[in-house]
Length: 80
Image (cartoon, rainbow, N blue to C red):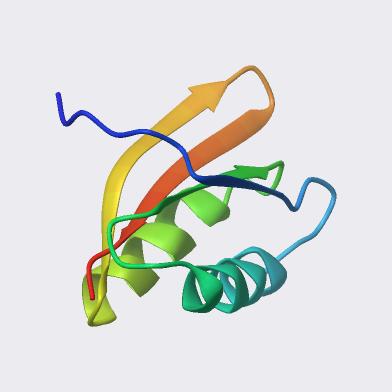
């Protein structure tokens, strides 16, 4: 498992597509290289949406995703 330390937490619970991805991008842009953003979402689609966004976006890496009851947790590292 990849080790990471959360730098900032973003709560987008209750928001539906595309807002979890939009807010994640806005917040990751403000972070420094190496920082990890923790995102809490309730939209089940956020699992594939954030994974797809991270895969196709330079400068970010999806380090983990966890489903915890009805909350989806995403961990995104800024790589550049």
